[in-house]
Amino acid sequence: MKATLTVLGSGTSMGVPTIGCTCAVCRSPDARDRRTRPSVLLEYGGKFVLIDTSPDFREQAIREKIRQIDAVLYTHTHADHILGIDDLRPLSFRRDGSIPLYARPEAAEFLRSMFRYIFDADYKFGGIARVELKPIEGPIELFGARFDPVKVIHGETEIYGYRFGSAAYLTDFSKIPDESFAQLRDLDILFLDALRHKPHPTHSTVENSLRIVDRVKPQRAFFTHICHDLPHEATNATLPENVRLSYDGLKLEFEI
Ligand SMILES: [Zn+2]
Ligand SMILES: [Zn+2]
Image 1 (cartoon, rainbow, N blue to C red):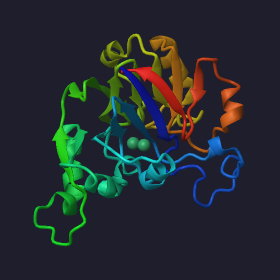
Image 2: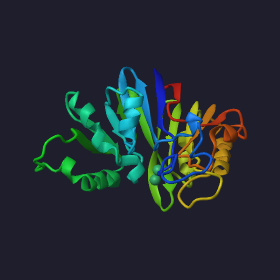
Image 3: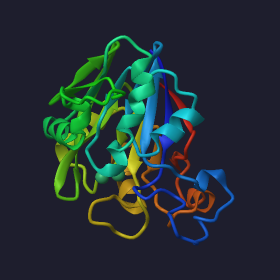
Image 4: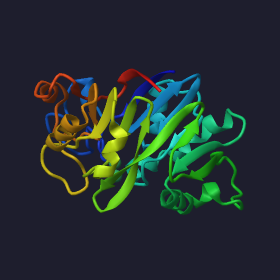
């Protein structure tokens, strides 16, 4: 089945421009240097699956004219991936039944305690998102497409990336365990964390992610979770032809 992936946000946790920063990338007039927090939207067969709810979800949803979300998959529970959860409210009110939120069991538990007011049956102030946590430890089928969690190492913790059809989305990792490479065969599209050039304890670099592209050999690779060290156009000029920095609003077609 044909699917479209839209990059909602391609930026690192602080976004680009970063508050208070006056560097060349933060002041760049190139729209592709304006990076909201990381998230992607998948559309296939009339269904819309969101990966992560970034703090910029409201702005992203308005920009991309999102009118429907049928499921959310969480990669992990860092603030830049979850804080937009409340902005699911208007979309959750527009549908029958609650929006399922899929996450690793411990991530689901974290969401439940972090956002107690949403999941607490006693909350009396109304207007809460109609969402439902669904812990997952293996592959799931959503609307006729299979989603496989791909375990990656993010600093000291193991989190999820996802493989779906001919594409995989791996945001936030410092290392991909050998076992996970088996899930990355025959990819058309591979999204990888590439924060910057300088090493970081919890994130991949451009150089490390290029080595992964060499090993996995997808048709096309896109970098995401990008900080203000990497100007879009100048960085792209240094990358192999099948590897590009992603940018907010980028749309890609693939088979799911
Ligand atoms: Zn992140
Ligand atoms: Zn993170």
